[in-house]
Length: 119
Image 1: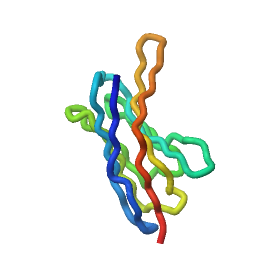
Image 2: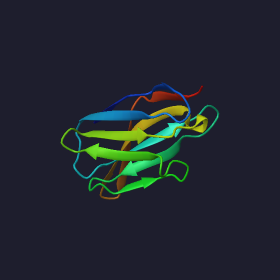
Image 3: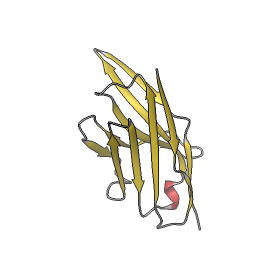
């Protein structure tokens, strides 16, 4: 099992910055991919960014150039640095661990942290 605990959310003005952290505990495997998703009110959960065990990252188009995902494998922690925040970034942000074992895929989720961008 994997337990994920997010932190760092809050209220920020447009153009501001926040840094989210997600600490993973339990049976973390070195090849697990980690990522961030978000869900705004009335919308489906969407992928924000992912990072592989080797550090390769991907971003959804709406955040590329503004958000940076990183991970510290020694601490089993993934981060999301969010700059130039916009009102449309307002959502609950969820940490994710994605594991592939043979042909089986497993997803683990944190409880979510609220990010509100408003003046």
